[in-house]
Image (cartoon, rainbow, N blue to C red; front, side, top):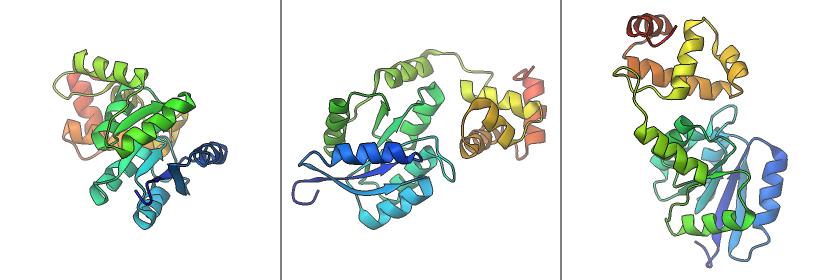
Length: 212
């Protein structure tokens, strides 16, 4: 931190969200907004250039989703502290973000005082999780796995659409998520099923009873 201020970058694909967060952060003497980005790819460039202390990262974005950006940023800048700030609360999204390297996970409807507290805590390396994120992690730890493939609920849903022959674009539209997020889930599916193509994934899924 320079001159005692916490250097923050805001990453979100909605301009109004970025503008609102930026204005809010500027009202605190110990916080310094040093940059903004519209997607994960921009976030990596901005962070490598500006070297912030804390990043507020949305997860569902085009071009590059937040989970991928978190993983790449942590690989290149392990000292950076990332707060996933999103409207997504699904178990697999929470776990994916934390496994990628997010320090904290908050919903976008978080109280502003709590958000500032989370930024200050993140700068100290302390983790803050929303109630929804905590519940999602508990659910992930206690629910039974599917066969031996350990598929998440979201991955099973994507697999159903893949088996139905839908493209990534069509799946994204059905599930109200970005194409890059669908691509992330499909890649994870192929890896967990130990296959290289969607056709092979469907064959394995049918034999294992993973799809109807």
